[in-house]
Image (cartoon, rainbow, N blue to C red):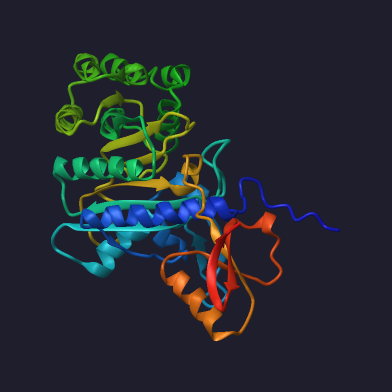
Length: 380
């Protein structure tokens, strides 16, 4: 007898978990609707060039590829839905004003994000296109918090960074290609020895600024401290001002903020603010987001954009109400029995027809029995 073993970091979703994922999916989509976000459903597979918004080595590495037998072209299984939504906004909808879109669906990655992650997340997210104002980022973060609360997540903390700080230093250092990627990876991992080795030929101002980023973590006071350590570049001033303004706007809304200036996303399409939401009991971030203003450029429209995403499968450890107990009904063709079953289901009751049911394997606490010619629901 053969062992049916699934690939590493790939797993089945069994009934109780599937019920929880589907319940959260519906509730979160309803939450998005309250904010004016419209749902789109991109395809699971596309030509590879459509799945990568630019030369994104990280996303390219995570994308499964195959050959389309109809066209002979290379196709990819999506590893991230954001580039697809950007294509829809830029190439299909072509709206002139602000566009709010949301989505949900499975993605497939060649490798997991961590030891406790899956390679087939169930992604759900919301994105706003066409607004460069900080108000768009504030709305997205507010919606992210409301969505996590709707999913039953409590004690949420927000960490915010800005990729513009690293980009400004890397541009001033004229880092390109592998050298820039190596510095990006080292900062992402807070690998200060590697950063020190890579920056040894930089002038003192750039080197001091770069080495300050991995240790720049904490409350709002960290922003003032790094102003004196980072080089006086226009991009850096704008980024720090942006972070300060975001702090003020979120504080008014009761959202506490901490900063991590070495917080960098895994994909290259982000251009500004980046943020992660963490919660007690979870090893990894429960939601991620940020600004990606050039994401639609490849599709002909470089519109400002910001958004967040959640992996629904990662949230299934949250306490969830037990499944409602059902009613066990006998099998039969009698009209009154069939009408009673239909009536109970119309009232929202779960009715399981006994076609060979083992009561220990189903969740029922009542049975449908006929007494004196009338069908009645009887407690077990």
